[in-house]
Image 1 (cartoon, protein in one colour):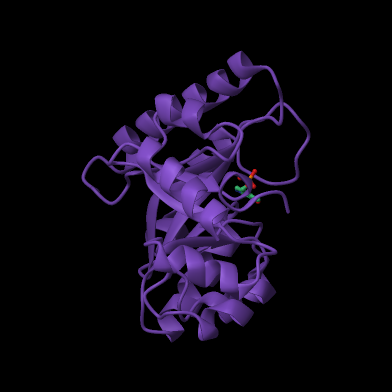
Image 2: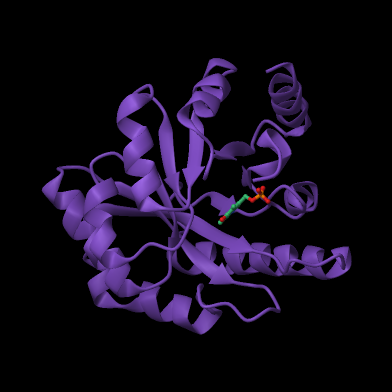
Length: 221
Ligand SMILES: *Cc1c(COP(=O)(O)O)cnc(C)c1O
C-alpha cells in the first residue's frame, strides 16, 4: 500500500500542471483502482471493453473512464453510456458508430484520433493523409454527438531515445498543422495523448498534455 502511494505521488509531482495523468489499470483488480482513487486519481484507462464495463459499476461514479485500446465498432454500445474519452479512434466508420451510440445515450463523446508514429509494424493508427481524409469528409463534419479533442500516438518500443523523441516531436507538429487547418476555432482540440511508463518524460518535453501510465504506477503486469 505504501509503495503504491509513493509511486503515484512521485509521478504526480513530476507532471506539469497542464498534463493529465491517466492511470492505466488494465489487468488490475478493482481494489487497486479504489486505492488510486482514494489518493486522488480520477482518470483511469482500460484497453478492453469487457474489463471496463465490469469495473465501472462497482467504482465511484465520478471516475473518468478512458478507452485506450483498439475499439471494435460492435463494442461501442457497451461503453457509450459513460466513457469519458476514446483515445483510439482510427476510422470514420468507428467515429460514425460512436456518434450513433452517443445520440442514443443523449450525450456527446470525446474522441482522439490515433496516429501511427512508430517504426514497428502495427495494425492500428492513421497516417497524415488518412487523418486529413477523415477530417475533410462531409460525413465527419455532420456528426453532432462526437467531440474531436486531439490526437493520440504510441512511440516505438525502443531504447533509442532519440528515435522516440523524434516520433513524439513529429506528432506534435502534426497536431499543430491539424489544429490550424481544422480546429482553429475549436478550443476543445487541445489534447495530445502521448507517453507511457518508459517514455512519458520525453513525451512531456515534446508537448504531451496527457500521459497514459500503468507499470510505473502499479508495477509489472
Ligand atoms: C498498456 C498501455 C499503456 C500503459 O503502458 P505502461 O507501459 O504500463 O505504462 C498506455 N497506452 C496504451 C494504449 C496501453 O495499451
